[in-house]
Length: 199
Image (cartoon, rainbow, N blue to C red):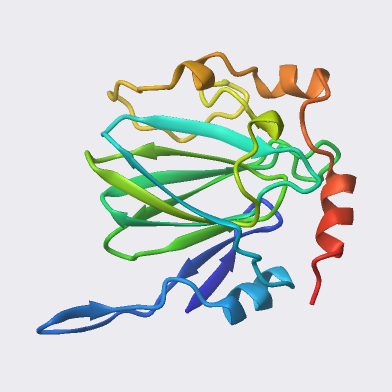
């Protein structure tokens, strides 16, 4: 498995080795040793989610209060998405930075996002499916969002596509508004919490 740190500290891309023959293929899409080597700790699995989206669906940018936040390990077993990783941690040296990874059924990559990092994606095909391993369960009172079409984020979105957003995502604040309101996690709080997870 190849591991690459993304432009947002605490986020990593994992590219598995695929073993194919005339029956099909096999791969390891998650390995705790690879994640531990990259992040410095294992992922405590509390919940596994799946979303299925039609082409043009834009979800995010989602995040949870830290502590405890919600770390995610995400892959795309069907279809294709552009997966966006956004540094929303106030005080981070890369605050506002965005990285994007194409998740699809060709390279079968996965992305890990540590607690406090914003996450979103754009479905490129009908039936695009994301599977998430999550460190904490869903808790509506501590789940938040930043508007994915905020010009300050400048997400690398394809031209000529009509985007479909949920009402909640459409009403989300910009990154600047979220920061001004105190909604965003801080770099210090994220680092302090993640230090408690070290193996």
